[in-house]
Amino acid sequence: MPFELPALPWSEDALDPHISARTISFHYGKHHATYVKNLNGLVEGTPLAEKTLEEVIRETAGDASKAGVFNNAAQIWNHTFFWNSMKPGGGGEPTGDLKSRIDADFGSFDKFKDEFTKKAATLFGSGWVWLVDNGGKLEIVQTTGAGTPLTTSAKPLMTLDVWEHAYYLDHQNLRPQFIGAFLSSLVNWDFAAQNL
Image (cartoon, rainbow, N blue to C red; front, side, top):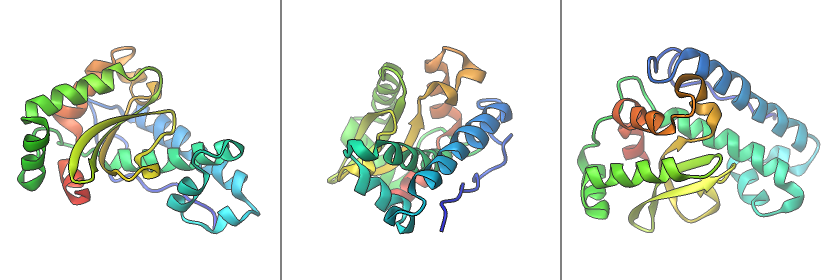
């Protein structure tokens, strides 16, 4: 059965003014949709076509002969996770167990924000910044290209896409402005807490 483009968890204009409907229409409707189309073309008629997206990612990771399959599959998964990592009226601070864990593992929520911002702003080129649970300790990790924690033992809780197409129409070259908007107004702490 072919892989499908998952529905957005909100309308295309729901994240205005931080991320415009125009950006979402390109990012979701073109980039994300193209990864789905490409993956289906690459796995058609192969045993991978019968696997789950997660299985495809894990089975092709690190195999240079299947780099195209991995890149498209991982980008489908990463983008779906990213859409769910945001919500209209998001941002602020988490609560409950997630807040306690962030305070314990980073020293405070402000220290977490500083580290997350630094890692997102300094990731060279294109990639992702993740909050993960790595063996019971919360960490912030960077992945480049289509990299994803699914190929490690870490459990992703939320992510920020720092590929230029995620922010360039709205923020041009001001990646820190985009990171700030994500943390203050978009991040979906309920989703991160569910993943914890």
